Amino acid sequence: MVDRIGGGDSFISGFIYGQLTYSTVTEALTFATAASALKHTISGDINLVTAAEVEHIMAGNTTGRLLR
Image 1: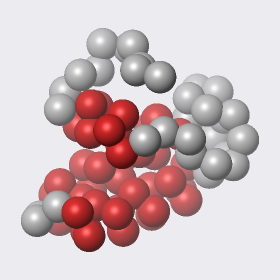
Image 2: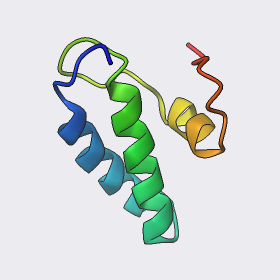
Image 3: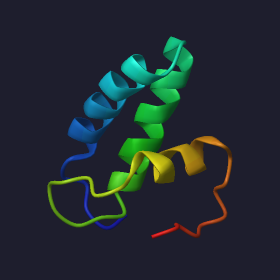
């Protein structure tokens, strides 16, 4: 964990995005959880990951290598 600031904000914004993008609440929660987890790898208040990076994690690609 690099920085825990902004993890909650990333979760809520990820959930809102997920509800607007996906058809089920489960998918929205999965997106939010992945977005929040990725935020912990970035210093500062702003989550600088893209939706594609979050979807990469959602797809089960958790090898520890982030595509940036």
